Length: 559
Ligand code: FEO
Ligand code: CA
Ligand code: CA
Ligand code: CA
Image (cartoon, rainbow, N blue to C red; front, side, top):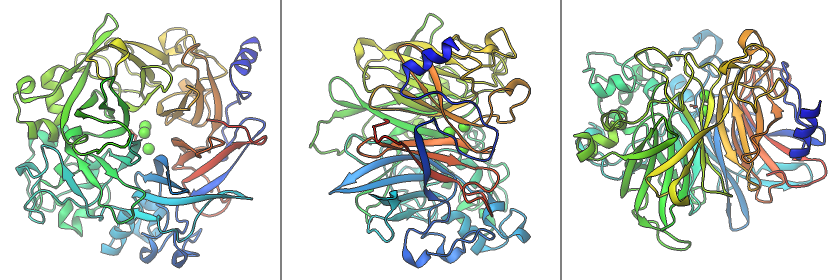
């Protein structure tokens, strides 16, 4: 009880207990309601298109909110409040007719799945009923697997990204598996392409290159796109996968703008993109590659920026680095260049994993979101879990110290000289998740994990303006065995100074919590609930991934 009181004293809310039901729970004195649900109309022509039994018809599928909400950011433009929101992937069984048994049976069904993923830009407004989607706002926009894009940076136009459909290698179509997000200092959206490999298959022979193997390309395709669209067929367009796995920039304030894939930031299974600034004004972007044993990355621009200055070249002219962690709690950013890797710069960027291996980067336990503290020069990365850690193939190391790591940890680093542009840093583990009821060794977690706040698989993270670290989980919600007492996936708040962590929100069973942003006045948090179970939130029909609004009943700020 004394530790619960201490937590209550340290946080603005009374921490909540676990849940195992199909609902969302928030602390006493807080409320929540859905803001936008899978299938909800963005335009009046799509009103009523969603059916609780059958979902969304293909004809309206690019005029509604997509499925499986993920990273998101808030923007303001001339008094309008906008959200840009990722739809990471689709559950085919949820979207397709039952007769299709989860596999698209024709080109229309493929198009439906393509349209339910990607990015949504929408306007929201606050009225007597809270924040609502502005139907038919000129800002409302869907960006899908079909949207025309451009590329910039050293790999744009290279032979590695040329296809039959785009012999110049400058005009890719679509952004896919949009996982985490980022916001540039100049107010545009960064959407991060994660498990793009799963969208490609083959109807004939293709060459299994080192690049394909390292990125998992050439396995079973997830949605059978290649049967209906040559772009996804490795035997027809072997370079198409090289055009995905990038950080893509979108201007949410201009619905006519063309998204840009930034090859200078490297190609891997991007989680999010956390932009900060070096002391000298250069742009720094921290990025994780979510795969067991892969790396953490940093991009540093050559040019500098300040408010009101042009942004040309900031995301296309710079250096990509991968992180090395030493056992003595120091570390360094290793530049990935032709000199350090023996690869051309085009190869370094298209096959960044191979380049980082050549440079000697440290293998990590699935780097998910990275969040930078706005109040001091430090950053955090959620290392979600790693069933393959341990043994000779992937030995334990300093920041990844546990074999068969099923709980995950959050790594923290502080750049030298309090400068995100510095090439060295010190590091520690902010928290090792674990179960102190089951284990009394390192699997019980670090000292700041208790029976009252335990969780597994930290994933989404964001700092609020008051310097608190909000932690979202995507883990085992069986509430059994090694996970007994953890309940459903959740969102917690961590105090970076004291290490204390308190549970703020619990999700419906089956869901992960991912994506967090705030209203401009910081009175409302927008939280993503992905792949819920049951019939959440409608209470009938199909489950609907949704963004919810959470606020304090007394109207105080919460972020
Ligand atoms: Fe899409 Fe690594 O989470
Ligand atoms: Ca994630
Ligand atoms: Ca995850
Ligand atoms: Ca997910």
